[in-house]
Image (cartoon, rainbow, N blue to C red; front, side, top):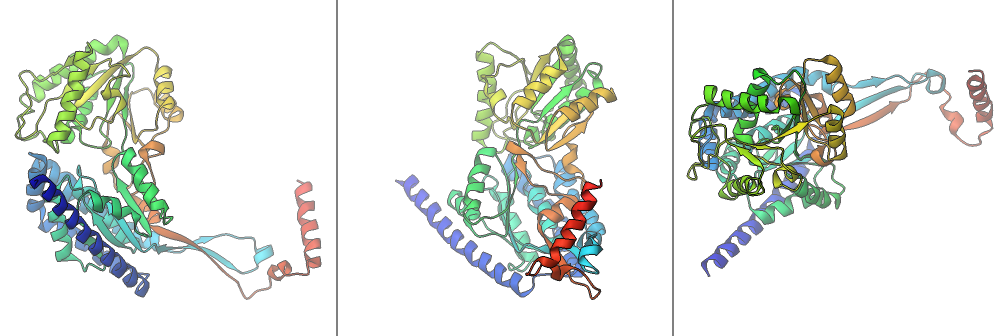
Length: 488
């Protein structure tokens, strides 16, 4: 009975949250209509306010991450969730005047005379951002910088899997911005369903492909344009000659970042069959030498929930029970239920029937797959869904070019993994099943702007009136054009 009452309380809370969301959404719509094109100075002040907000609440942010993850390394929170925002804002503001400037296009003076053609990037209006639990502040406040720089108003919807981070985000935003400019909407499942159904001017969602399809379907009812960052099984390819300490150090380091709970983490790795044993031994050596006791240390991020942890442990058990080789390189490591910390696990040559090969892993499990021919690896990748990231380890320029020219992915790293998502100057996003649209850099400014074509007639003579009926005056002009074409 108490569970049923709790459920009713949650539903009632969501009803209140949905009603409040609709109120704020309409208020922001009215505010945008009243002031649809903020100046550079106004946008600069808003972006700087985000940075100041993050810097002044950095310890609270780290405490909230600890609370939601069971354990979260503070240096990673500082580097990504705090300082990453400052770096992104600095680059954006340095480039913003150039991005906001009219983009003049050349047109034929023979027809259009002295008319001018320009593209003016105007704000879209009110944007919704559905924020994931794995990087709540980075993916909440990072795109917020892009959206404010483009002149928009924003409502953030944090994941209910990170309640402490969500509550802090709401408090931070409320104390920094007027809710007609930026607001946070907190709630559970019903709010998450209602959020994409509003008539946004643009909607951003970060999460799984399955949920992304539902979000896009809901947004389509109002023809809302979407930016979807959907993750996926980002592969790493280690080529012949690249099975070495540097490759293993980077691969394992990137896999262990937030215990693999990163949308662009290396999901699985292809290794030349002749070097498979060497690769595994290099992993053992790296872990024993550089990461002894890692799982129980302050550097190991906890898994976000018991349910997610159970899912990962079930993946490992499934592989082991099916007879596949399962290796935990850290001697003596075990799962800590209290902090939800779990060790790095290699699954060697897993079959396609295993969950580790069918689902995005999102944890410290690394399938290691031996291959004989690189083109067979490329063919297998091209036969599947296009990933968010693709990672190539090689020092042969011809091989690197071959892989890049023969595959498609949202982004690529060569001789490292994952880091492309942290570069403010590079667009970030997926393609196909891994998403659509981009944030970061000028691509984000344009993503969250309306590229408005503007044609202004000049005072000098032109041939524009030839388009008006009767059309006899067009005949000579058209004949002359065809004569030029026929003459080559």
